[in-house]
Length: 320
Image (cartoon, rainbow, N blue to C red; front, side, top):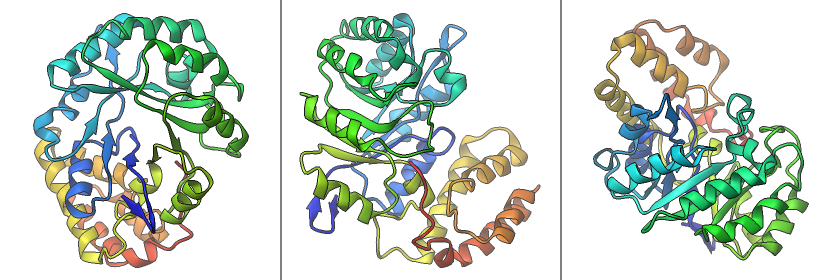
């Protein structure tokens, strides 16, 4: 992707409940501009990989795009179960989640919560390194409850020799609040022998350009919430009809994939609007939330899409 006059790979960060295969294929078909998509994390529950996670990364549901599946685990046996399943599906690049900040995950020493326990990270990496024919990347915070916990993690990366390290310069406990710790990010950039990807607070292509001007050695940039808010952020010539076609592909895709009937379909589409076009007028958002039937939802969504230009005002940035 070329951001103004600077060429850089753009990676779509995973958002649970939003950037699934239906969303990915619709964004790619209508807008594009993304070099690789990262799937929402896969995990093991009750001794088995969640079936919906396996369905989401099914290659037949992700044709024509570069998809990087992501695993979340603090136990080596769970991680190996997922890696072996993904390898059988044909994947050779798998991302390791050391970044999820949400307490139900992190307080169980997963995601960013693992960063406070380098011995767990070391054990996990040693297990993952036993798998041949697979490369790993890592998405992480600078720490869980301290901003320099990355210092104990960085040397451990020698075990798996990652393709790259995507860094969000906040602690897990900050979640998406508070200042980005750019000083710690710069320290990681200087210390890491592995390629670094910047992730966090990129709300526009101008933000990306400024980051690249400051850090020209970056391997890529990763954008999450801003892309979910505006899937056409890398398509400057996108029209209202493009957003409508994107939305129509979502409705069609979820109608085919969800098996819980109309009520489940409407709830899922309402969930999408929690991030999609956040500048939508309050009364239009309220009408979408209050919809109980697909007919009601489509009427409300059409009204919102008619006002898409207002919903895309530059001040409607989202945190990443």
